[in-house]
Image (tube, rainbow, N blue to C red; front, side, top):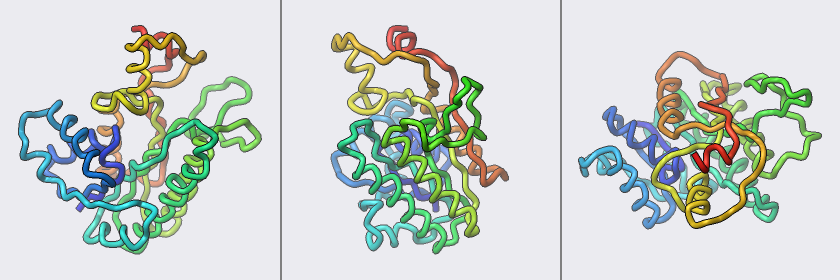
Length: 250
């Protein structure tokens, strides 16, 4: 059995499609019934086979609720932890700590107790350290707490520390650090919201260059790493480094 958190989000929904196409037994966490409609739309963007979506065992729970999450780990061999609270509003910092750090700590503890075979965590390039000398940023770039890091960056880095703890307690882990993820199905949130705002005539965008990657490339890399022998490593997932202007007005 494979457990997927954040199954109603951009990465999680596309991941579920790919896992279902491989005929895996899947249990996916969701919070509200309404969120499942977006996942169905993602499935139909891949195939007209309505039975594919029905292969998923949906489990309603909040990842920060320990008693509710315990049954979700029954017979689980692999965990894909995609759930996260994404915001760059300082007012959301407390909620981000609750979901991203505390929620991940709960997932790690339950994975250790369940003796899962492998644990994949979807982090972000926001959790990778910044170069003070404009050198190339790699998986080995060290986190600098002295920089003016966003609350989101801090909580994703904190979540990574929890995942590394799992590796020290016998659970092999994979961490992926995607750039800005582009994909269909979620025009009202995440990167999709940027394109929706531009389409509606919003005239502003941030300066600078960042890494972009397709959601399909992200989930394919995750599955490949989880099914391979590689363990206890992190991987930056970026296809191209571009400015927002180049991407939004391409």
